[in-house]
Every structure is written in structure tokens, then in C-alpha cells.
Image 1 (cartoon, rainbow, N blue to C red):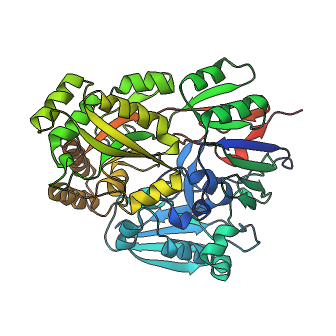
Image 2 (image 1 turned 180 degrees about the vertical axis):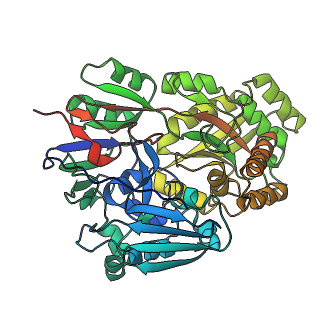
Length: 498
């Protein structure tokens, strides 16, 4: 029986002041509702403010008790019981209860909805502060799928309020149990939040948070220099170097689970050039990863040959295929494309610079690409609808382990999978129910070896994100939560005293 217990909330002075973030992408209303979690970490910029989870990463603990003060698992691995904190309320005054937990799970339709619904037999409300999850079969990854940002499934919304206003009404005026409550939202411009002083963990230090959409790097850097924003996300290349040299500004590299790669969406179409492993392998040899690293992230990122972070449980570490343009051209010629070929290359605004650098590498060996750059919400809609083809720049920074990453991007049921291989699919099913850790690790390693041998993807790097903040900020929240990309937890963000 496993038992984990949380800590008592800390007391602080009344919140004061305002911090403005310059966010590199627009904030879609879908990010207000954890039920629609995409498997990408960006929506957690909102979740960590507005909402709270039964369990979530916090400083010093990757699976920290939150709305649940404790939980336990039965010895047969079939039952998990969560005990909720007493006295916790949503922003509208409603109590957080086991009924809200059951409701939130049952309406969850995010990235891993299928596997969670397939494996959970029943969610039972024992009493207002106790809820039990009954599994159909022992599932060693239940907590990894449910209780980490791998899926967003454990973030809780208020049943009574949501049933009253409906899904669309909730996106217009979301109510959560997080450290900040919703004030206003101007689409494409900004989200304004104010401190929820009754938050269980601690009283937030800052009174008001403003998340401002500033997609252009040059504009974001200029606003930071002028003091129009206090914190800026994701600077690259000469802009990052200029910020690093500017007095009063601090540039900080943030390490996270930030693997990025090219996805070959048409590799299962026998009529497509991308069904030929040699073409996919040519792309892997064409990309000058280290040059991109030096140019865009000041050499601070790590190169990788996998879409799975090397720090993940069950990760099989592998170096990328070496940069070898001559080899790439040879492979293309052997595949029947001595003069190269053409392809569309899809990306979103946040990845445009690295995608353009990759397009240049591909162009050097004869793969001529036309870039399609979309806003993030539209980009992920195209991915989920399987319309982005044949090359897609992919990125995710969500938590989990090798199995959760494979579930989203490799398995037949994965929300971002365009196809699968029968032998890999069989191994995925085999490891999912394997309770012997060593045998399971061997199976997951074999899956990753096959992914690499078949060049299913063109992994680019485990990217370091370069964030920055101004002189008013005492604590921007970078790196407080291990391997978390954004500021967090927001209640720990502090301004300097006057």
C-alpha cells in the first residue's frame, strides 16, 4: 500500500503588484479547459494558474499531493484511492469534492482519453472527500498517465458550474481551484488573472498576472527592454545574445523534456516517397543539428536521436544519425530521386526559426520544401485531423515516461499518429500490461530501437529554452519545478520589494 501525504499551506502577506508575461504564442480558449489537454505543455501555462490537479509536479516533487492530500494503491494493482483536502473551494465558492473528480475524469477527452477510458473500469465516489479508481487489469502506468502533465486528466473542474454554463460558457468564463482566478480574456491579446487568496498551498505573492500574446521575438525583446513586459518566453540566436548582454535583464536557459523532431506522416502510404526508409534516412543525415543549436540556442541544447527524453523512465538513449550531406544525396539517388524531391513542411509560429533552418539543410541535399506556418491552435487542429502532410515539425514538453510518449506519437491510437507498424503495435500492447519492470523495460527499449532503425522520425534535439526577465522580478519561477518549461508555480513568483 502506497501512501503520500501533502504539507500544510504556508501563510504570506496579501498579494501585491502585477507581473506581465510576453508569451510567444496566442492563448486559445481551449486552454481554459483541462478536458481538452493536447499532450503538449503549452496549455499548462494556463492550467497552473486557473486550475489545480489531484496530483501535479511542484518544487522538489514530480508527483506532489495537491487537491489530493494522499493516495494509496491496492496490492493487486487494481484500485487507487485518493483522499481530498478538506475545505478547498473553487473560485466561485463551491467545495472541491470527489464528485468533481469523477465528473472531470468522465468528461476528459484529451490526448490520452482512449487509453484511460479503456483501462479504468469505474470511478467510485466513496464519500465527498474520497474517490476510488477501479482498473480492469493491473496497469503499472496508471499514475504516470493520470497524475502527471503527460495527459492533463487529473486537473479538476467544478461539476455544478460547468453543467450550468456548458462547455462553451466555461471557456468564456472559466472557474477553477488554482492560485489565480479569471478576470478577462481578449482573444489574440491577453489573459488577465487575479490572486485567489484562499489557495490551499500558499497565498500568492503577486496580485495580478497578465499573459500577453507577443508572437514576434523582436517585439517581445523590445517590450522586455522597455519594461512593457516583465518576463519573456523563448528567445533565440542574436536576440537571445543581445538580451544576455543587456544590463537589468537576465537570460536563463531552462532545461525541460523538450524533444523536437520531424514527423513523416506519409511513411505508411506505399505510393509516397516517404514510405522508403532511404528517403527518411536521407533527411536524418541532411540535418546539421549542431549548427542549428549554435545558431538558435547558443549551443545550450542537447542533440538526440530519439523523440523520447533521455531522462524519462524506460528511455533508450541513442545518438542522432550523423550530419552527412553526401550520404543523404546517395540515399536519395538509390531511392530513385537523384534530383531530389519536393514536399510541404508544416510548423507553427513558435517553431518557425528552427523549421526554416531544417528546410535549409534539406534544400542543400535536394529536398525542396514549402513551409506552411500556422498559429499553434490551428496547427494542432490540422495534426489531430491528419491533414498536415508529408513533413511536420513536432515538439512536446509534457511529463511522463517512454510509454506515455509512445502512446501519443507512435501507437495506432495515438492522437498524433498517422499510422503504425504491426510488430511495434504488438510490443506496445505487450508492455502495457507487463508488471515485471525489467521485462517491460526490455520491450520498451526494443520499440525505441525499431523506431530508430526504421527512421520513423528525424529527431532534432532536446532543446533548451532561453527565457528572460527584467529588473522588477525577484523570482520568475523558472526551474522551480524540475523539467518544467514555463514559470511555475505562479504562487511562488515574486516581485522585488520597493
